Amino acid sequence: GGSHWTYEGSHGQEHWPDTYPDCGWKAQSPIDIETGAVQYDPSLPPVETSGYRNPGSDDFTLINNGHTVQMSLPPSMRLHGLPKMFTAVQLHLHWGRKGNHEGSEHKVDGRPFPAELHVVHYNSEKYSNVSLAMHHPDGLAVLGVFLEAGDAENSAYDHILDLLDKIQYAEQKTTVAPFNVRDLLPVHLGHFFRYNGSLTTPPCFQSVLWTVFHQPVQLSAAQLEKLQKSVYSTAEGEAHPELLVDNFRAPQSLNGRVVLASFP
Ligand code: SG7
Ligand code: ZN
Image (cartoon, rainbow, N blue to C red; front, top):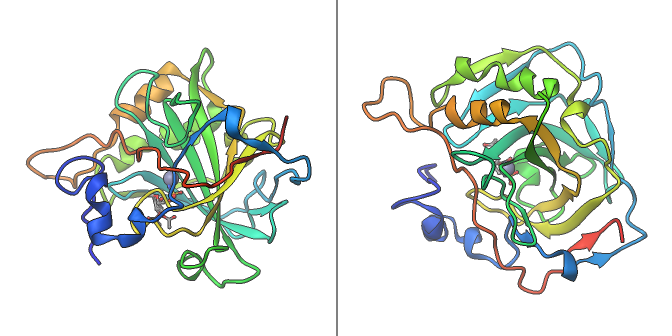
């Protein structure tokens, strides 16, 4: 028990296995995707989303949980093209502290991106909720999207970024009017990497079928900066406020796992 883990320091990632043994297991995430070593699999079905474009009329909840900013998603949002049907639960972000360098969890040929979006889904054909599903190897499917700096502002991301000032401190929440969540993803969903891994945070359960899209999504430099400078990992009123930054885990060993690619 306890959720007193951090990315750096005395409860930092090298100590996670002391409290959360799965974090020391052999099929962990994230990974560095070595494009020279991936295996092209022409039989991988394309990933398709449903319900993303028009996700109902109920507001989403956006929360600063001290580790990330996370937005709830309705069960009408689903993923297809995987071995089972998966239902969306939430999305959240990982980012760095400055500029356009590190911040993503996955890397490609050793190269990090400044941020990464994760959309978490659970296997709703087999399990009745995400808390149950995350204990099983076929329980979760997460979409990973690399974010990089571009010239233009990405208005889809403003639905989230514009609200960060309302959840500056840990445990604060606000509501988000429903918007087209498909617009947060790359235009091309057909090119992706696929592998079996884990939650990238404690308890690090090895329950995630990962889909990491090849095509990054662009945000303006100002939008990335907004992400890097708006939220704190500490609660309101704490004597030493700490910016919530660098919330990414180091790449984990493949230990013989093969990463598939949907494209040659
Ligand atoms: C973030 O990443 C949160 C967690 C999430 C974890 O810290 O979004 O979600 C909650 C509900 O706290 O854990 C089970 C789960 O979704 C790990 O998710 S990730 O592997 O996609 N990064
Ligand atoms: Zn994540």
